[in-house]
Amino acid sequence: MDQTKEVVRYGTPPGRWVILSAVLGSAVVFLDSTVVNIALPVIGEDLGMGFSGLQWTVTGYLVTLSALILLGGGLGDLYGRRRIFVIGTAGFAAASLLCGIAPNEQFLIAARALQGVGGALLTPASLAIIQSAFHPEDRGRAIGAWSGLGGVAGAIGPFLGGWLVDFISWRAIFFINLPLCAVVIYVAQRHIPESADETRTGWHPDIAGGLSAAVGLSGLTYLLTEIRSKGWASTDVQIAAVLCVVGLAAFIAIEKWDRHPMLPLGIFSSLTFTGANIATFAVYGAMGGFFFLFSVYLQEGLGYSPLEAGVAGLPITLILLIQSARAGRIAQLIGPRIPMTAGPFLMAAGLFLARRIVPGGDYVTDVLPSVLFFAVGLVHTVAPLTTTVLAATDQRHIGVASGVNNAVARAASLVAVAVLPPLAGLGGGALPQGAALADGFSRAATIAAVVTAAGGVVAWLTVPMRMPVEAEALGEEHHCAVGGPPMRPATERYGCPEEDAAA
Image (spheres, rainbow, N blue to C red):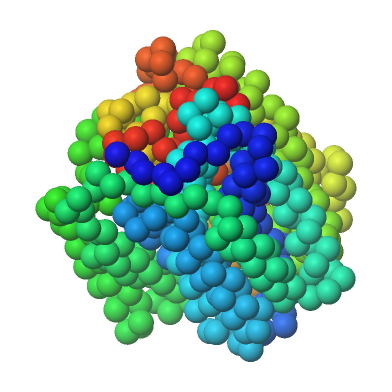
């Protein structure tokens, strides 16, 4: 049974302190992922980084985050969610300091990988703390507040990142994490009750699984990032290929035979669950890869300032904030298959329209239509996707299901940032300029559009028209892949619980 020393109520001072710490902790991770993309061109210029260095600045963080996030949720259940939350926040702050003082490319990439480790610990613990700390009658409102305030942080992120880069320094986007993390740790230690899953007697954290996944994903990322410039003859590329194969094979073997795997492979026996996660991989991979290039292209190709590039994508976040609940209700009325098919196709239309974004183009006529189409498609994809992932899973594994969907989305972005630029002719050394950059961006937009549409096709083929009635109230405002819910346990509804419908 999950044990908590005390239960807090929504609307009381203790409840507000818990929400503040949990929201601010998850927001720091989310803000960091958005502002770094905005800062990439300036970072590259200051540290003399080639295009592959910019890729590694993003993927170095995603490798450790996506490989260890399931493990992070399990550690919180075993050793205490507040304890792991605080350790993760402190680690994230320390890594942010290292990023801010980075003297060169290699130092920055290593520090970003350490940031991913901290994020993998604190992200799943954030919502788990709210779920375990609040009285059952108040959990819906508490989770709603967590989701809404997290959305506000997402809206502020691009603007804040652009402002910091424009008026202070790119290093400020990392230094700003330090006081925020200090507040999180102080409030958590004073106001968050400790909780853990005490039914897990004899359970051990799947350290081997997490490490093998990290090795495999690191090898895969290096292979995809460097193969175009170095070729198969390179010893580095060959070693990366071996690490990729050995690491991922070991991960599958460990998860198959371990008594307490962080990823029970049997969860994929459901065609609907597997199909929904394939769709997640396609949609979030295309999105992650495209928006990595989008921020760079707006600054290097169209001459936008970092602040202007940050504001350019703001309509996406605003539409998600305003329309998510309504999109969830529509999905409840008509079932998940139609929105999960139409949504990716609308997103693909927005990505295809991005081909019209050329140097000298106007934001209102060239950039904004692409952004709006993409945003409308995304908002009608995320809510039914959450519902489908959770409804397709045995109720004992609903926490694991939400964690898997989260990890799939992170891994998809990791792979896409590594592979999309080379496919579009933008990988390797220095970033192309002028017509070459515009042509590469156009090819990347086309590839991303095709992959996103493929996700819609997969959803049409694997997702039923209607899900079980009790599942349709899930996930109206909170999407597993976006919000970073707790990863475990298999016995309780931690991630995206049914109380979300009340939020």
